[in-house]
Image (cartoon, rainbow, N blue to C red; front, side):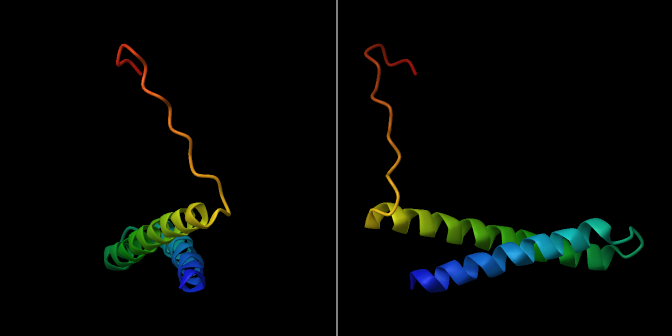
Length: 79
């Protein structure tokens, strides 16, 4: 399942960059194409972030990456 999420991650980020470029370079007269490309870029970015976080969580659980260290609370409750 992890390999499938990794492949989804690559495809999603590729779609984000490709459709993001199309959205940025589309002439203003073609607003329909621009909005479509923008929506597809947002979808690719959202899927890419979701897949990335799933892969990070998996690598921390399996010991491939260290889990983040959290700061201990201070006595006065200040950060």
